[in-house]
Image (cartoon, rainbow, N blue to C red):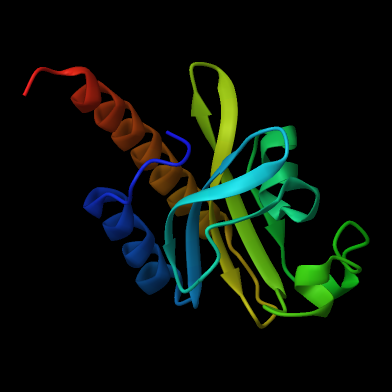
Length: 147
């Protein structure tokens, strides 16, 4: 799925997440050895970022929802260039994308203001991550079907 063209279904999911959570940015990120690549993005311009600065890399390592209510006070992220400089991430919530028992990326939302994130919010984020994985599986299958 890395470096594949944009697809409307994924764009719809991230746009829905922006509305549901009232955040400026929602992303479907896939992680490889050195980078975080965005399969879909709403409210972001970058196509990819270095893995070493990716909040999503932390999400896939712990394999559960990662919530950072204020990145400025979280020791893991306080000195991250995306916190101290543009886009000035303050809030991050990401749910891992689990495909064939592997955490391959995350479905995440980002805000430039600190915020709380409830258990219901976390559950909804997991649902969006699961829907994303289902769509990834369908997209992959469509590529191998005869025209």
